[in-house]
Image 1 (cartoon, rainbow, N blue to C red):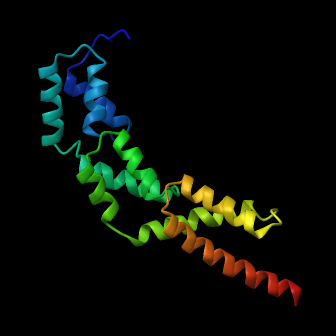
Image 2: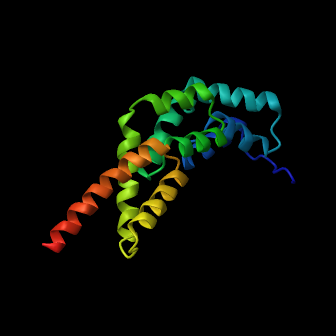
Image 3: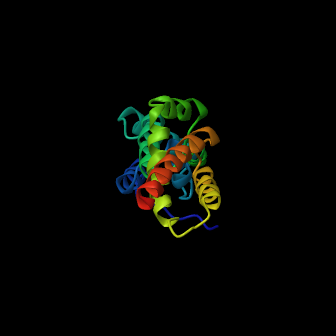
Length: 165
């Protein structure tokens, strides 16, 4: 890949990247290295960004994990996406440990949306299996997924008895 010629200082370019969206320190380093900046200038720019609190992997991990939970992702998926962005294990663990009930609520929200799309499925066993696969694919633990599916199963049984009366 051909390197791009810089027109600004590494710090100015870092600010341009951060203006578009939040980045982890590793992401910002990789973006700056695509330009022809010398390594000391990149290190200096990153240090200046840290000093001014423009980049902070702990804050980034917390905000990004909240965003992913709201989007219906589970902790396994969030852990993987944060690791891809260059966030360390300690920061990931801290971001995921803030609120343990968040996983259950996110799972319930994701399951509610998927459950509506499964209403045409006649076989209740297949419906539960499809929901479980969906939740596992979203990164939820099997224990949490089974707990939420049990809630839907009870609600579905109540609705069936109401219609039969």
